[in-house]
Image (tube, rainbow, N blue to C red; front, side, top):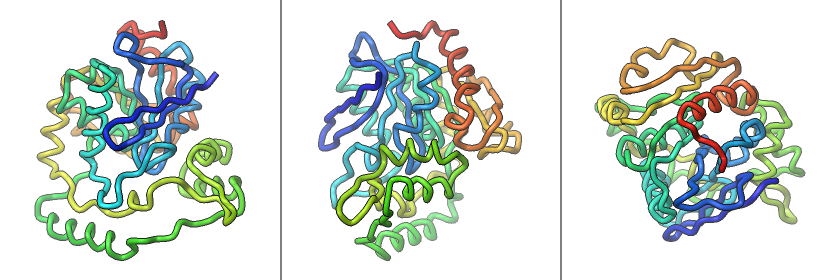
Length: 287
């Protein structure tokens, strides 16, 4: 059975899905954080193999069923860290196990570095480090970010004739099957008389006005105190041996798996085995 969850934190409404019906300070979840323009449903294939674990997959603000930021706001990377800190403090969650895919892994890494009391264990799925820009590129990055905000301030959403067509469009941009694209589409779209469109806030497609330098990113990674499991896909974002990035973590275990960037969807059983083994070593289970 699948349960919908909702958390009101400040002005934002977080949405999530789990096979557990209730979480609290005494029974905290394993948080699952998805990648850019995905949603909580990206963890459904993985969760099907991990029913003994209290997984809670969240929709980031601007994605899925979670609310969008206000009209005068933008999607700064570190604001998602703030959102998570506010949520954890509201729910009295500490020393969580967090599973992060892609962007979700970056947010979780920054959270673990800056708020170590909130993260007890970290599992990164085809995510390692951060997207960076060298210091000399800061003016150009700022210009590109602002220009992207001004070009189409009131952009129109693409419309599709059916959920199937929306899923087909999403599949063309990624490495998973139509069946898996439909999981994202079922949660990530809305329908009206005009057709089917994706729920995600259009501002998510705007370029960042700033990015961390390599030195800043390295400082964050080196500040992560908790044990880390990195599950990297052989055909994913880190095909080259990422020794330099790995060496920045204090305690990290590397697991290579077959598949591409969305290996937790396409090779869910293999990824689930690695997650289960890591969690078992810390005696994490569903009470």
